Structure formats: structure tokens, C-alpha cells
Image (tube, rainbow, N blue to C red; front, side):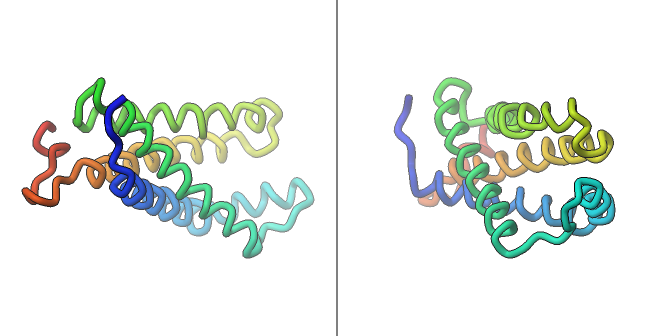
Length: 153
């Protein structure tokens, strides 16, 4: 495909990951904290995550962000530097990284279905919004102070 600006890809990916991690924190540690605690206790596990689990989950969010912006950069020459391209990349990442990985827990009722569906729905919003933010950073043209991404919207 086209030439990838790796510096902007990493910066955009980190912004995307920041969006993902922020939404995950608010959703899981604030809004759904009690529901997740009940679900973990039902499995015989402690509800509190330690530093190692939190570190892995934070790294996961940033890696998903970097992958999302990389996918955007790869498909952008074909679909154009437009918001719909970032949405397509975000949807693809959500489908592969969120929905497909939730099939087994959903089918086996490992966690309450409503909790899983809420997490999947919020995950869709976070990854698409994050990918759009990261794609904007990736497309930003610093010399002109404008964005090819915003100009084609």
C-alpha cells in the first residue's frame, strides 16, 4: 500500500488507546463496577484487579489503538482520507478484537449477557471514536496547520 508515516501512526495510535483506556476506566471502574464485582465473585475470583492485571489491560488498550490507526493508514489509500475510512477501520477492529473474542463468554454464559452486551456496545463506540481521533492525528499536516482528514469530511 502507500507510504506510512510511522511517527504519526504511533502518536495517533496512542491517542486512540488513550480514548479506549479512558472509556474502559469509566465504564468498568465507575459505572459497571458493582456488576463486574458480582460477575467475578460468581466465578470464585476476587473483584479487585492488581497492578499486573491493570498494566496488561492498559497495554492492551494502547496496542488496540495503534493497530486501529495502522489499519486506517493501510486502507486510507483505497478509501481516501475521510472520516468514513476511520469508521471502517474502527468497525473492523471492533469486529475482530471485541465481538469475535466475546463469542465464547456469551455462548457459555461465563458473564451475564446484559453485562457483555453493554461492554460490546460501549466498546464499539470507544474503538470507532478512538480510531477517528487517531486518524485525525495521522492525517494532520503540521506545515499547513490543516488536516487533510477534516478537509475531505
